[in-house]
Image (cartoon, rainbow, N blue to C red):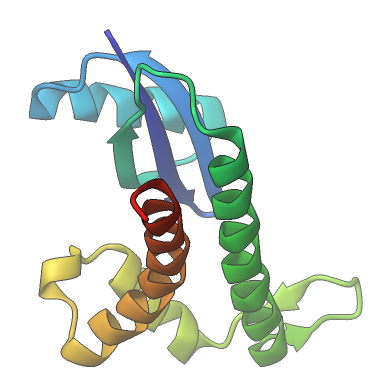
Length: 141
C-alpha cells in the first residue's frame, strides 16, 4: 500500500485527504472516488492524486511549499469573492458564466485546456519551481 495525497472537488467546494491505498487500476480510482463521495454526501471529481514519499519530509521545505500553496489559494479566494455577488445572509453567488467556465476547466484534463488556461496554471507552478530550484542550489552549490 502507498500513501497518496488526493485533492477533489464537490458541489460545496474542494477537499483533500491522505489515503493509504493501491491506486493501480481505473477501478481502484473509481472505488476511491465513490468512497469520498459517500463521506462528503455528494458527488466528487478527483482533481489529482500523488504518491507521498516513504522518507520523512524536509520540514523546512515542506513549510515553504505549504506557505506558497496557501498564498496561491488566498489569491484565488480573493479573486473568487471579488467576482461573486454578496447575498443578504452573507453567502455569495458565483456568476453563471464563471461557474460554467470553472466547472468546465475543473472537469478538463490539463492537456485539453486552452493555451491561455495552461499558461495560467504554469504561472502558478512557477511559484513552486522557484522554491524547489532554491533548494536544489543550496544542496548543490
